[in-house]
Each structure stands twice: as C-alpha cells, then as structure tokens.
Amino acid sequence: LVWGRIGRMRVRLERLIALWRAGMLPKPRTSRVGGTRVGAPPKSALPLVPGWLVVAVREAAPFGAGLEQMLSQEECVEFLAACPQAGRILRPLCRMLGVGVKAPKVGTDRPVWVRPTAPPVVVNAGLVVGPRGRLMYI
Image (cartoon, rainbow, N blue to C red; front, top):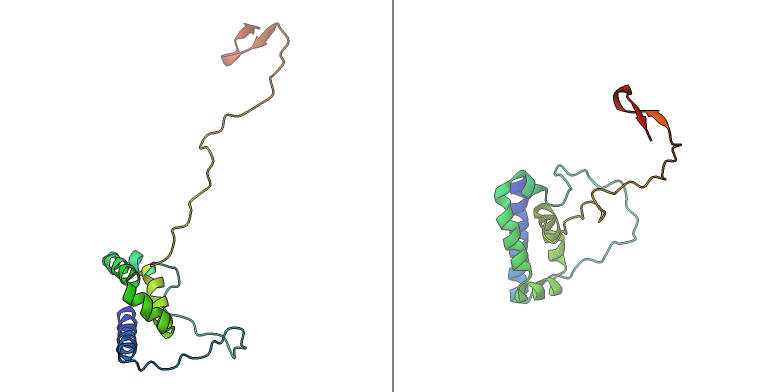
C-alpha cells in the first residue's frame, strides 16, 4: 500500500518536472481554502503522525535525508516556486519521512531535584522519644 502510493507520487512528480522543463505547466487549481465541503474527507488507511514511515521501516531514514537535501537545492526551490501543484505531491511524502519536522521539546527546563523548604520545627528542650523508642535529651 505504502510503496504503491510512493510510486504514484514519483510518477506524478516526474511528469510535472518534465512539463516544467518544457515550459508547458498546467494552470494551478484555484485555492479551496475557506470554501464549503460536501461530506467528510475520506479516512486514510495510512498513519498521520509525522515520520511514521521511518519508525516503521528503519531503512527509509536515508531516503528522508536525501529528499531533504534535494529540496534545498536551487533548481528544486525554483521548481517549487513555479509549480505549486508539486506541494500537494511532496507534502504527504515529507510527512511520511519526517522531513522538515522539528523534534518536540521534551519536558521543561527545571532542576531534577529541588531541596525541600520546610519551616523550622520548634521543639521544647527535654526528653523525647527517638528512633527505636529510645529516649533522647534535646
């Protein structure tokens, strides 16, 4: 299921790159942000947590690093600026591989152990019962 989806993404992206290089890009669709939706979006059979593919398949980590390096190249930046349709193809792939996702900060910056502060205990001088029931003079 996953490899089939990634293969379809590759074919769509290769087609867009070929059209971009030939100068025959199709017009991008108008944005549907703020529009009304009819029905609920279909449930995905794949997990939605960022980087889930790297967790499930450790061998996928180098591909994420390669994709991140490719996206930082000048030609790719120009392509993504000229062709916003590519974002719809690359966004799910980047999410699967955890590309561009910052690691969440774990915990807060606080000391591990805090010295307890308690008010001083006032004890009258005299005999008191100490450990193991022994009498002690204070």
